[in-house]
Length: 86
Image (cartoon, rainbow, N blue to C red; front, side):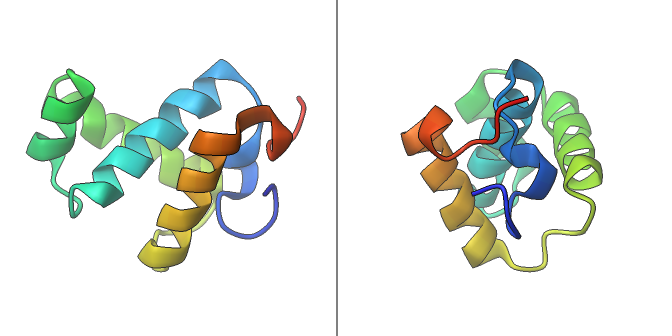
C-alpha cells in the first residue's frame, strides 16, 4: 500500500494514522469540513489543518478521489499488514 495512492501516508505511525483517518472521513463526507468535523468530533479548522497536512505529506493533491478513498479504506481495515514500518 505504500505505493502510489497514500504514498508517505502509508507509514505505520500514529501521526500518519490520524492524517489518514481524517482524509478518509473528509473524502467520505464529499470533502465537507463541517461534516467531517462532526464525524471525527473535532473542530472544522482541525479537519482543514489535517487535510492540508495530509496532502503535503502525500506530496500531491487529491485529484484521484476514488482511488485515494479506496487506498485509505484498505489502510483503515488492514492496518499494519499493508502499511510501511517506520
